[in-house]
Length: 263
Image (tube, rainbow, N blue to C red; front, side):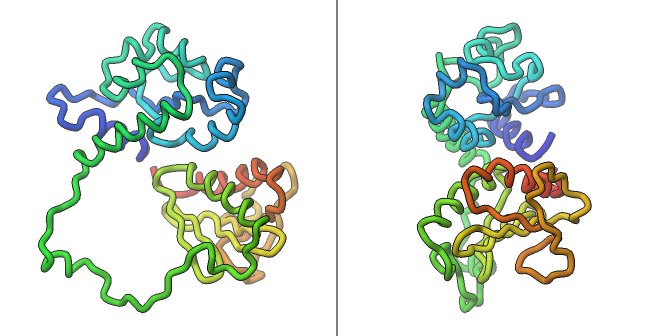
């Protein structure tokens, strides 16, 4: 089970004297991963269903554990509740809130995330350290500069929108994705950097950390920058100058993300 599965298992079994054996359970996305949602899901999520699906798909509020992942598949929420082995028959504490709902959308996902967040605070409490003990871990050199999105020379209203949409999609790839604002680019990493973003006046230039020969690029949007010495990591370059390209660009980024050693 991957890191998300470990977190869910920890939340399920925290302070539970009858700990659940997790070996036969897999991660279930309550809002399905399939971008071609059925009419019931579209009605449940509302007019912005596609954006809501992308925003919350991989967040803790939308994830649970089940032994009936294949049976649930992309079924409507009411079917997932009532089917044999569905949520109403689940003994997992993770599903305690889920079974009380009649529909599933943004309000339910965010509320459940809050509930699970309170459990997480107890499952992973902050250590209670003295000032002397804390001094050993505090950064000694505060002279290193820190950067934000506002520090980039070519930032404007247009490319800010591109960045905000792209940023949300990348961070939603997994809870362990980290973002770091560097002097010349924005780095996204799990085990290592898998995509670096350079703000340019009319687009975002992305360095994808893959060998060019390994990338699957049916739309032909990638450029081979092997040995060219551009800012960022990797041999693949992609430009994002329109929100219409976002899905195609994310398909390339996800290939590099899947190469990370984070399981």
